[in-house]
Image (tube, rainbow, N blue to C red; front, side, top):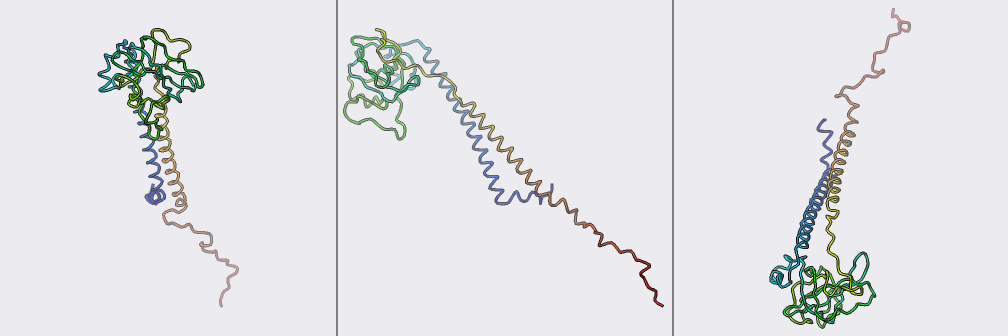
Length: 274
């Protein structure tokens, strides 16, 4: 393959094409490895949740010290706490469960030393919210860390008691609740007395799946390979197309046509000069 047949590959148009192709390949490879990192994070999360949920329940007081210094280190642990529900409830609206739209019902449980917000569960939209049980109650729940505010997310009113919230902000709720508020809240699992049919439906534990991250990673690597193969084929086809016109010329040798051949002499037509 002669160098002249490849010189066009360094033209500005082809250089731009090369840059576009290899930048695309690099981006696809990066996205593939990013999905693999997401898979690692999901697997680590699943392992953590499974380990903590499988541990036996302990009294909430045993984990409060650790919860105050690093609440994420005790999230998903199962705990028990005994106290009385406050009558005033807070609606955490715009929630969903089992594909249905509704709200979660938040109720503060007060014991001798601590107040903890309990997410008693899910109610459908427009359903009546029953009042909490009265008297002493023993609660079994999962520790949860309040979700942080997302960029651009609307906030609740900054003053006055709240009856509805977009998210759980324990610092904001501390103003309207008595006693020392725990830095975490609980998803209700069960209670004594038992949860009745008219009470909110407890929030189930998270679904622990690895998600589509592995299949997405494989797809990105396949896309990168396909783009590279397409680039190779495009370059080879273009080189072949540039070589073809030169095949008709053979190293500068020009074929002689019939008009270049000497004409035979017709003896009959010649005359003799006396």
